[in-house]
Length: 224
Image 1 (cartoon, rainbow, N blue to C red):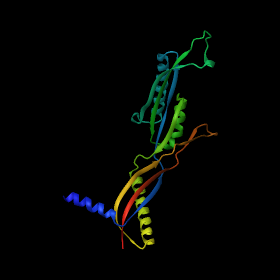
Image 2: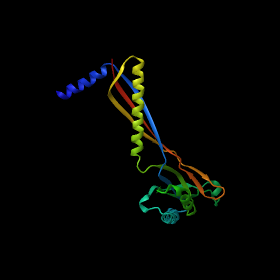
Image 3: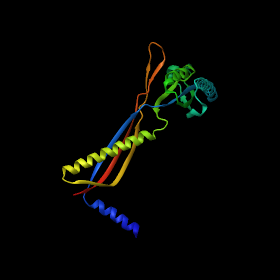
Image 4: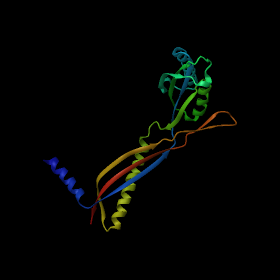
């Protein structure tokens, strides 16, 4: 009975005078972690040949990562596949009319780079070690709790300021918050910009900044 009464009071409060506003807040931060996805694609007349080539090149990548100071725990296989494909006409050597085929093995690694200042140099070393497929690199924070809280606090302050101003414009005073809903704190994680440094021949990776945005909807009571 008490629970029903409490629910009835809450519903009744929303039936009275109230105002609904949205609040937004965002903060920016420099990332301290990079995650790259890259690997090798190998071809062979048989699946065994393609696998052998792939295994050899991946071993070279793992050695380069170890030399670059990347822990084994920060490397995992993100994609592995074997497929058969028809060789394009321009690459066929035979003229007997048969469809030439080859096997393709793709092995991609997800690499967590904790020293993002060395990300460009590490990518160069991996390409030199045999990486022929780079899916991309993104930047993030190891712990984004503080940034999410700051964005949420700014969104709450924005909602309260809007509601108070609207209440004053209509000759009312702002009461207590009756209902608060959050659509989530969204972290905008841009893909890294990768440029080729003409003087050094190495890849320059620009980390930029991350933006954490919070969105709230708040219903306030209006009082005379």
